[in-house]
Amino acid sequence: MERWDGLFCGLLWLLAALLTRPFVESGLIDDFSYVKSAFVFADTHRLVYNGWATATIGWQIAWGGIFAHFFGHTYSAVRLANFVTSFATVWIAQAAFRRSGLSRRNAALGAVALALCPLFLPMSVSFMSDISGLFSILVCYYCCLRALQSKEDSHVLGWLVAASLLSIVGSTARQIAWMSPLVMVPSAAWLLHRKRGVLPIAVVLWLLSAAVMLGSMRWFAHQPLSVPEGVIQGAVNARSFRELLGNMTAAIFCLLFMLVPLLAAWTAKRLRAARVAAVAVGALVVTFVVRFLTAHAMEKGWAPWTGDILDKIGMLGYRNAWTLGIEPSPLAPWARALLSFIIIALTLWFALAVINNAHKESEENAASEWRSLLILTVPFLAAYFVLLCPRAMWGIVIDRYLLPPIAFGILFLLRMSQERIGSRLPAISYVLLGLFALFAITGTHDWIAMHRARVEAVQRLQSQSVDRLQIEAGYQMDGMAQIDRAGAVIDPRVHYPAEIDTRPWTLPDLPHGCREILNPHTPALHPHYFLSASETEASLTLGEPVCLVQSNEQPQVYGAWLPPFQRRIYILQRP
Image (cartoon, rainbow, N blue to C red; front, side):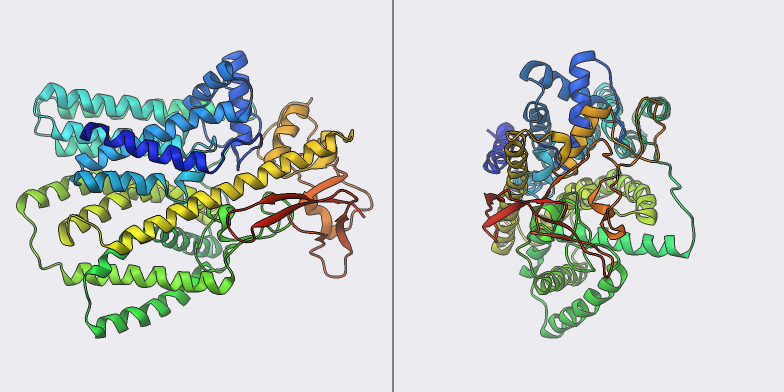
């Protein structure tokens, strides 16, 4: 029965995904652009960009296009493709964890912890490329493990070739996954260099991977309406290095936040009273140091420190985040500050417990397995974080970029707990994993329910003969409307053909501080009605009048599973 453990883990993810009621005819984050490309691929068998994608999204678009061809041109049909990918990701994660030395119980637990992570679950019900990238990385890792554990030379070479070729295809969906064939496969080859034929094959595979990567990037750069994004994205100065420090700090602590249920297992290792006091004091100091370093971000230095998905599913509501107004959040600032302290305290407890038990010698076989595991994964993770640095210097490292480190973090922590604590995790870890899963399900449900309410509000207005282009419904919906009307969304980095009108639309009587209510990416929309999470939309400029007021239309009411349980989408208009 063990061979079916991955299947059962995948079915548990599927149950959680279906509980969120994931089917909604609206974009989620960026996926409106990818869904539109899948529609076009279903009709033309061509990969066409529309002014928004900075990722190559190669095989994912073809995969989604197959579902659009057979099930219709709907968001739900295309997202079914990502359901299959997500299911396979959970399955391959369980298999990889098992072959990494975890017990049967812990391998299944690790796969479930990944599947019900508050970052994995929301992404799995969208058509974003994050899951496709993670799937490619885990497939490469699994093949490398099989190569390391194979006895016959021919099997070793076969698994290395499979790791490279599958990664080459898989990395066309998300460029950062190229670190799999370029770093992880050579790491495996280094561990296997005594095997006959491994080194020459590894050199050939690396050259092939590099050539395909360069060719893929060159092809992408020459595609009409693809969005170029260079490594150097701005001035290199003291400010950019300050941003690098702050944003990478935020990313690291967000990563620790996602691993807290497994870090908390180390509270089973009792510390002396003096060390407990040191943890409390140290956590307080680190909490405020981290807040100082990361206070420039939207999260203002408190958990989750960096956002995007975690913000959307309930961690934080802030003004005009893809949609007008401020989405309600059940967490007050003091609760996020307390949560920050707890996360950091558990991390310090973990560090002290590991140091306190470092004198215990591992068995020789286990030490050898750890060496192989670290050589296979640490160079990959180091390269991965280095490639995040340009984002950190001139932007932010948003939370969903952390999915691959989360997967390997789960593996490392479960392996350490299995060796140093016991075959079973303590109860606190199961309780926290349950709370994380509950938050992931309820938060994702509320996020999608909000989009469903927006769709219903737009349909209500359209039933009254209001043109779709007169409704600002949030960028996830407006982006598709812009593409349908003009052929592309507008980005200053893209060169557009003359037939696409890129001029921003504005109103002559619009106060200066109200300009942000009109999205520069969607100039084809000339809205009179605006959907907002707030009752009014005020100018950010001192002394300016309100930008939007309530219309005669009743708000669209929807239910949420996190407080506040009854929420509204207000239909505003220009005063």
